[in-house]
Image 1 (cartoon, rainbow, N blue to C red):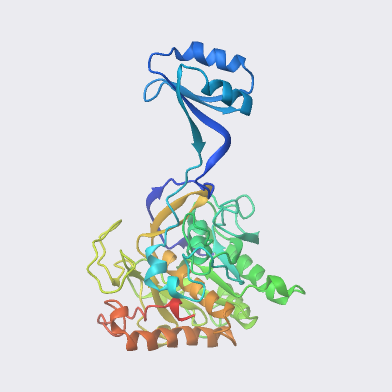
Image 2: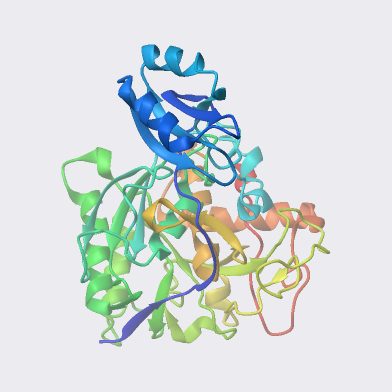
Length: 422
């Protein structure tokens, strides 16, 4: 069996833990600041003898004092002590507002029907992330189920890749962390790669099989509308759903598409024609190439940030299409220096077609949820590409260097998608 790997690169870890939304005082918690000359240990011992004082920190350098949970009676007594300079409420702190990631901004997610980033959006749709799992405890993600198909603990993400993909798709619009294209959408974690980001075709087929089962069981509420696969390995499209070249993954995907699942996949990161990479090469999926954008705005000229690509140009690592059949299922999305959710409740910046694909998955999910996309997966894919082409041709400044309006010889990256259309 072939080995499957992720289509991303780790760039910079932003260690920002999930935090409470409120910036107000934490009930009963205070910082007691003593006069500079007051002896900390003896004052603290006397205050503790009052009862109702639970010390949490002591300060000797930047401050002379301590932090504690104080009962109302203890608070009054402490405040009346002449050795106390003042008592400050202990306040909850958090990341400074919610970040609208550059990728979401670049495809006009903030002007879509759900207005990603305004603090109110929530989209009613089921999305599967077929990856390394998802951090189901992440406060920014709405994980409702899934299936473990690879070594590891159930659907737990011990790598971070699947959780990052998930945030771009569906991080909540709750004024904290980041926001996705379809905020708060129901996510299903389908773990097909181990915690090193590696798996086998048999694991991938297990994931495809499980996603497909949601469309064939008796429960209509769990139907997966769209599934993301930001992974791949060597292979090709035989034009016969794998029946001619014995490709079980291809046949499984064809059957899943027939059951009604729209599959969105990453093109790969080798800077070559993706005809030899699967699932990208399969005609039945929507394959996503990566665009570099550093400020969330069209027009180019922004300084690079986490890597040295050129603003509003095809990503230097992105695979592309050359065959006419492949061009017919190719589209582009932001994939450079993408900030999103990560494992252990954190956030992270990553680059790759792995990061481009979930922008497209979210856009497909939004189109389906709003009723703008109906019919079979092939009809939905055709609409997404047609809508992107129409908007880019009417607004040539929206696109990028490398799109069909600004072509690079011998390489087809597709038109840039636009979530703002739905």
